[in-house]
Length: 374
Ligand SMILES: NC(=O)c1ccc[n+]([C@@H]2O[C@H](COP(=O)([O-])OP(=O)(O)OC[C@H]3O[C@@H](n4cnc5c(N)ncnc54)[C@H](OP(=O)(O)O)[C@@H]3O)[C@@H](O)[C@H]2O)c1
Image (cartoon, rainbow, N blue to C red):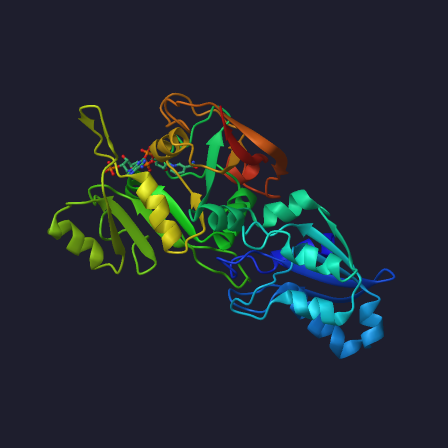
């Protein structure tokens, strides 16, 4: 199953809104064939592994093999033929499955069908990792809203801006991890202040790899974003409140970016909150088949999304420095405390030979986990 999980990861960045899936055919400790789902609408992992095996092995050899697949095989025709019939035809008797299909219509169907024809089907092999592979798919398929990952780079005293604005907080390997997240996710979302202050490109930069660039989403109620911002192009959605002036809209639209106008939040008592309605935004992004979003800040954005219990997972990179009161904090006042579940802690090492005193000169910590609001 570990091999199947490694296979699944190869599709990262190219299968959305489908799940990442990997499969391995094994017999007496020998791998006969491997496969992974490599692009949206493309053939499924188990179908690829079986097809490869048929070219090299006899029907009898394949029938004696064990099939490992990270996600329950599908039973219905979608963009491709369903996988269940080809598994049945192969004669394979032992099937190991990482996790069930979260799609309500599919869950458990192929397992029941395989057991009915006498197959031994074991479910829940390396389940935590297999569930992690499909966490964004699970959210989208069950809620039709995107999975939100909050990514932050901060100092030990919880500050997200460096006192010297031009310097990085986290080291090169930590920043590479962020690019891997961008590769894996459909979109990046951030507040307009960060775009104004930092003028980021918001692209995926992974040297030597086939990259996919996420959609860029800028939260900007009044369209304050400067039209020369590097982030503005055909791959950008600028989200604003209804009723922004035509002049501002024209200036942003001329960059190629799409403007998405939202109604304000609900009226509470006599007060009308002139903030954009985030519920409407999440539904709209889901409708546009954006199934996963990396929320990249800054402080105000993190705060409002936590206060709406909207962040599903956190990646918190910490650099061993103290920045003090002049820097912005990770969050302002929160209505909830947040704890991390299934927490993982990783040391992200400094670069060898880095200039002393720079961000690259220090080891960083990555703490990640699912958000639980208390
Ligand atoms: N270290 C890190 O990980 C990290 C990451 C990102 C940013 N940063 C830093 O954070 C700083 C900016 O942080 P910030 O708190 O000033 O601003 P911000 O969070 O980048 O942007 C906040 C602005 O976004 C707009 N907005 C629209 N909808 C919003 C919503 N639902 N929730 C929150 N904001 C919404 C609001 O402006 P309107 O009212 O005009 O719409 C708001 O003032 C930058 O200096 C940047 O370098 C650090």
